Amino acid sequence: MAKRFPLEIEIITCPKWGARRPKQGINTVGASVRTIFHHTAGHHPELGNPKEQSRAESMAYARQIQNYHMDVNGWVDSGHNFLVCRNGLILQGRWLTVSAIQAKHMVNSAHCPGQNGQIGIEHEHYATEEMTPDQREASALLQAWVAWHYDRKDVLPSQPHSQYFPTACPANLKEDIATINRRAQILLNRARREDV
Image 1 (spheres, one colour):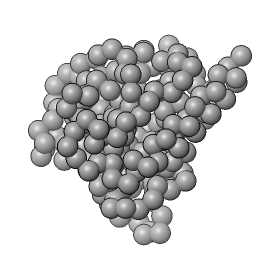
Image 2 (cartoon, rainbow, N blue to C red; image 1 turned 120 degrees about the horizontal axis):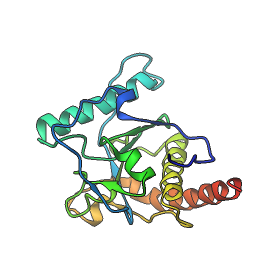
Image 3 (cartoon, helix red, strand yellow; image 1 turned 120 degrees about the vertical axis):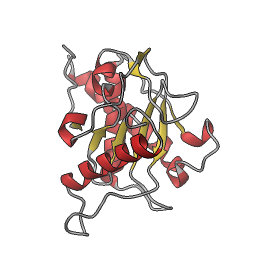
Image 4 (cartoon, helix red, strand yellow; image 1 turned 90 degrees about the vertical axis):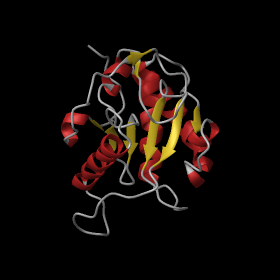
């Protein structure tokens, strides 16, 4: 049984957001040594009040992305490992990601050629908009959670998708990576202090 992360975090797993089952088995690989920082280049579908993003809209967005990855790209499942929405919700992308990290492994994914054994984190984002404070905090908390389960004293370094693949992704969010990593380290340090 995985040890309990001492800070409050919710990761909405695939069954909870209504993910389709993968087309075939998901392979596990060794522990990741970095995270790859992505953006979605789009937004959740509008299901209700345009001034807010609901839990239902975030879950619908995860389904929309998975359908595109499976039906258009032809992948076996969502390509990424996590989706961090603008409302601060964190959703598992590829099946088995959460349990693999808790077991100090990773799953083979499809978010960046040559880096698919690394953790791919999508951030809901369009054009040049800024991240929301909730989204930035959730991204940092997620990275602290990963490092915690990997028994690391430091968070994994994050690199932009564009460092490994000819793409503009993650657009202007590249500027947020260092700040998020610093905040993740603070949260990891707090978690380590609280686990005594």
